[in-house]
Amino acid sequence: MSTDLPTDSPTPSPTCSPAPSPSGSSLPQPPGVDLNTLLIRQATPTILLRVNGESMQGAGIHHGDLVVVERSDQARAGEIVVARLAEGFTLKRLVCHRQRWWLEAAHPAYPPLPLPEDARDGELWGVARHVIRQL
Image (cartoon, rainbow, N blue to C red):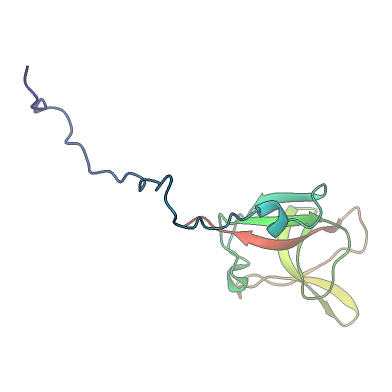
């Protein structure tokens, strides 16, 4: 019985295996992190949304990131919010200029959008609390 690979099969690539766990060892174990405790203040109205677009790059939020959003129709000036507009949902910073609420992008290519005063045209939908990015 030959142990050679046939010439038409791909060459196996090197793989990395996880380091063996020192079971029974006296090495201290790192403390675990409970993501629910760390990222979520109110479990029921909190969801994860995936970012689609580049309008918030200047705030460190990139296309493909996940944002932890607390569902709320209340927010403070300066917070990053999710708003429902006639065109769909958007993620922007909430600002007040001349006694009017605006949704500002963190990218110069995107102009500010007025937050509609009539709920039929749009509304504040939630407040972004954290960003999760895959490495």
